[in-house]
Image 1 (cartoon, rainbow, N blue to C red):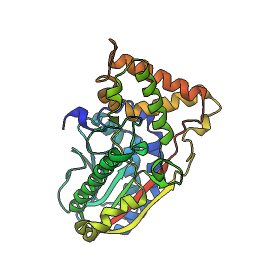
Image 2 (cartoon, rainbow, N blue to C red):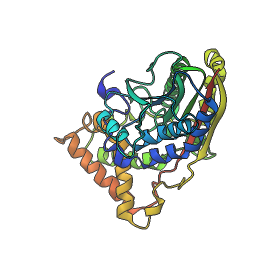
Image 3 (cartoon, rainbow, N blue to C red):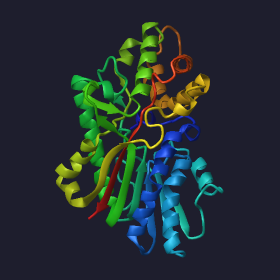
Image 4 (cartoon, helix red, strand yellow):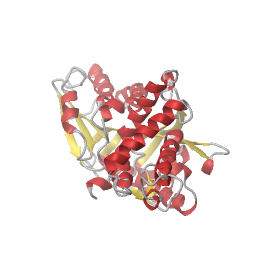
Length: 360
């Protein structure tokens, strides 16, 4: 798979625009501590793997509660932490942060990296006591190209395009779980949490998915650019973000139907709940300052979406002598104006999907 075929390759200014990711990790801090306390003393060391770690503070906050809880009970015990992510992750920034005052580095704590896709095996069989994965598993294993005019994301897809993407999402989720089943040792725990979806009567496809306003704002601006000759309609009609936000039933399905997974894991929790803070508009605190409200949304969107937009839409779809960077600048300018002039219309709603499994 090439660098540009990864769904998450080249995220922009992740650390500056990852407030939602950090909020999700912090939401689970007590659950992480509880899981570690239930593990008890592990010999020869406690082994933690954070899958899809990213380069920012959320990677630290995903590990620190586990280290603190374990060291509170077993002060001299050795802890091994493995941060797992793709080659394009900003590894230098991450390891600098680990060793900074905001990090968790201390004597007796070993830190390593596993480089690759979590849709493949990343560490040795039966070697993980606690696995975590935050705001990552909703990204699919590959970039998506579908016949999907009128929608840049899964939530509004219809017909064959939605069926095809749903099948890919389920296959990826099953593959993710099968890899973790091999890596976790018996009694080990896996905590996965990302954006989710909930049933909603009257919504397209009968589901309300996280961020629906954000993706619809991007669709609107992209269609404007196509209508005005900035990008090729044919390229836009096949562009879809490589994400799928599962309902609790979708997350549960392979664990109950696949014989290998059914035998490998005990389910402790599978649920979807509203985000605990500003669930209907992540930047609601700034809605009375339209410029700042727009700046925050555009920064957030650039952080997770620019790679896919640039490599799969702006550059290959460039039209009438324009190039990718010029189209990107116009796209974000218009997006900013939509959020500034209509605060709240394209608000980012968030539901959290949480999956907690114990290896049998």
